Image (cartoon, rainbow, N blue to C red; front, side, top):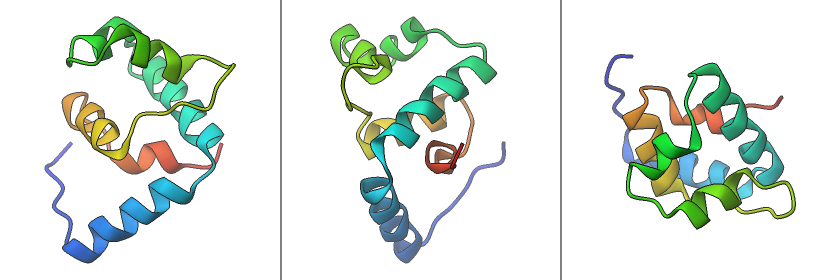
Length: 89
């Protein structure tokens, strides 16, 4: 994927969208992205996140999700658009 560049207003829009979209959508998309890219949770843990945090993002019993900065890091590291987290499934 080519490097994306966002203006300040686009970043603000992303921030607002990420913080207002239903957490279930982000959680479902995280699972979908990991499956589509043939990744495992340990691949995300290798980015420096604790196993407790990563496993909580995938657990169905809570509404924990990566913070936007974490979602951006995951998107950059695995070469997909961060807006993938916001897609309605």
